[in-house]
Each structure stands twice: as C-alpha cells, then as structure tokens.
Length: 66
Image 1: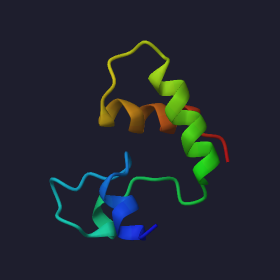
Image 2: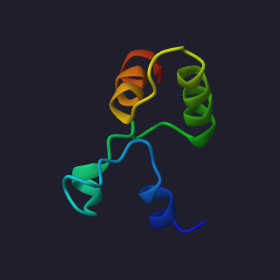
Image 3: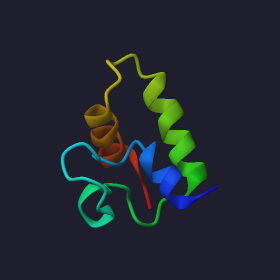
Image 4: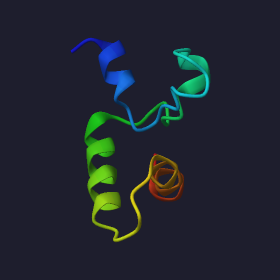
C-alpha cells in the first residue's frame, strides 16, 4: 500500500490543521508497529468511552509500552 494513502487515513494524523506535512501532523510513536497499533485500536474501541481521534491519541500515550 502507498505510504501516503496509509497516512491520510491514519488515526495519528491531524491533517486538517496543518495540511499534509508529515513532520507536523504525525503523532504516532516512531517505534510502534502495525500489530501494536491494531491491538491498541481494538482496546480503545472496546473501552466504552466516546471514540474520538484526540481520545485515541491520549489512550495511546497512556497505554503504549515500547
């Protein structure tokens, strides 16, 4: 898959406020792989909280372990 396509639908990007500049919009932990992303996304989706991009970013900050 094209990396740009992946970035456009990424839950770690804030592409509305900064345009498409990866240095400004990417909030993904640099060492996180797709498997860990999928695991955290599933945990967040089943957490019962209101699902938002900001909420997911905060969830990752609190729950991601390197």
